[in-house]
Length: 423
Image 1 (cartoon, one colour):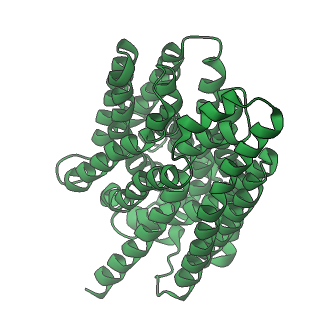
Image 2 (image 1 turned 180 degrees about the vertical axis):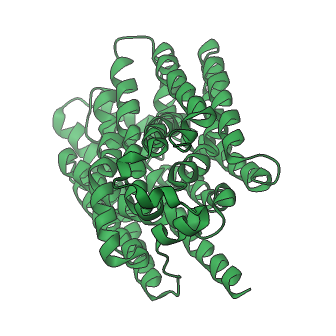
């Protein structure tokens, strides 16, 4: 009974953390719109450096995060991650106000670095705090917190920063000299300062709260070995000797790529149909709403009605269907199918992560870090979309990038997660 109460308390705390980093992560969609105007960027490809800087941090910081967590423990590691995020939000708010794009990207990279540490700790924690077979259910619970935050953050940023952006774009266009244009853009850029300062303060407060909380300290490798009775993990000498983990890291790479495409790139996709910016700035919230529905379905269905693998198969098939439908339609209908990809994507992370770390035993922390490195797919695939669409039809580029990703996820759900486990 006491163990169940401790687990429930832990899930509540991790749920709050998922809300926090969901709020910060899903600001990137409207931020693409913000930076393109505020910094006077002439291409979407330059604006998509927002996602590149943010998600590449996971690639470079995930393995160092695992080493840090071995020294600090998961609880102190989560608090440290929150403090690093606070530093990043302050840097971004400060330099974005002065329209310094390179240093603003440094701020986003710093935020991503803190999130890398936070996610390297929190994802395996929530996966192994209970039975591994129901891990997708627990991840769905905290995922709901993440997606509620993701729905709210674009709405809040749009209300405080992007309000009346169509009229602002018109004012910049008709400005007769550079000084007038700079004055307009300086005033617009400064709007981001207060929201990001508030976020920095909140992140510091949450970090100290986590440190003072009674969150149970869990040694992921020990619990994972006990749950899976993994004699095999004990005789292996390297985390690279688990094929299902390495294939899972690639699966995370393509999954995060398609998730960011559906969430952060949907506004740019809508602009391809000449939909006004005052409408496209909210499109990320629609995708996150669809993801929220998917998490609720996962909470009810897994593992009672369907397994984690089955959920992943269904999700991959839905992704292929919705992507094809988006390509075959135009305007708001096409955008609606892109938003519907949120439903297809919702159960992928909750299924992929526990399947990939299952049976790693003493290698769980390093295996988790390798999976977190895969999040850099959010840096590469959307950036490829933004660059290629400048030369080719944006719907065709979207189709050719997304379908192979979903096909690989389907492969992992059918065979990839079992690779090497019979040896």
